[in-house]
Image (cartoon, rainbow, N blue to C red; front, side, top):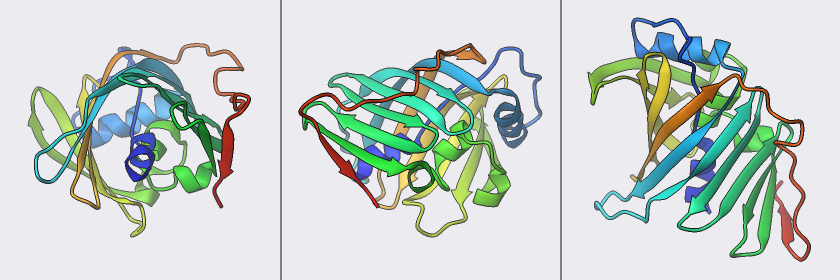
Length: 207
């Protein structure tokens, strides 16, 4: 569940129309201020400190600021994380269980606050530029809160678009997320971020 919560925090969006910025922190701030909604696809994998990795996952995402998003894993199994802006629902069909949390409990000082939130990034994170690699401009966002659950997240940008996230958690595991086929500022239906637990599924409300 810890890894799933970290993955929930990880992710999304960009625009080919955004003005090019000199470094990744500037691109991040430009992205956060201009891109209010988005859709796309992702692949992700968590690698342990000993080098062993879990099976890669892939799926689709959508979001709308502030705080609304959908993160749907489709392969190799299904899992759904949805936020309506007030509550975050994490649905695991295999367990027939939904975990419900308040948005501020689930996002807070997390990568999701960068990608989906609308508050000041610098209030929650210490942001610094990193050297370019793999054709991307990189930054490191370190949470100012000691109980964020992760050490830092590195975000790679290309032409003002986030393309890759690398999150280091407190157990030394790295979750790598690739973002592709991103569409910025689409019109999304009002039902996009609504969730109702299927019949027969247990709902666990976290305090």
